[in-house]
Length: 101
Figure 1 (cartoon, rainbow, N blue to C red):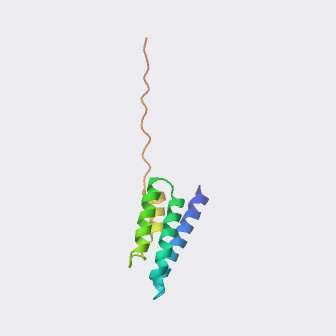
Figure 2 (cartoon, one colour; figure 1 turned 90 degrees about the vertical axis):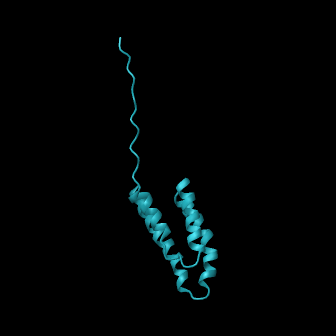
Figure 3 (cartoon, helix red, strand yellow; figure 1 turned 180 degrees about the vertical axis):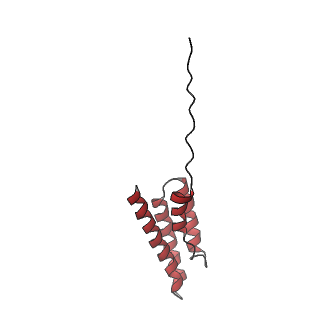
């Protein structure tokens, strides 16, 4: 599990770096965002399956397609949310009924 988490973290950093790199290209950068946004959205939904992955993929698409928001590290924030900040709910207590004679 630790190796999977490390790979996910490295992938998150790389995808965020690529998304931010388009800001450095003066004229072509915004047009590259049009290509990068759907790809980043697909990768986010693959990295984090389920409902939270779908929500995150929409957010990363909007973040990449809107001008001026490329500096937000969406992939890294999703990693932190999933593995660092989110607390797992405590398992529900089960009631065991016992019949007395």
